[in-house]
Image (tube, rainbow, N blue to C red; front, side, top):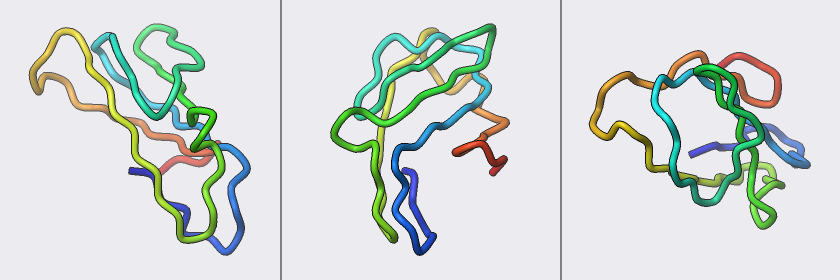
Length: 81
């Protein structure tokens, strides 16, 4: 989930993270880039904007499956989280 805890609407969002797997399917978001083990995703057409206090969720299937390496090094809208 991504929550907008600010007082202003977000006109689009991007999330960057490190992940050693390969995302094979994604929903409620789209992959903007995948270079090495770094992914950048953004909202789908219907959930790019998040109002104040709003929350969106997305998910994906990755290969290889299993818990393996976790996601790390998150950057949301240009700011580390």
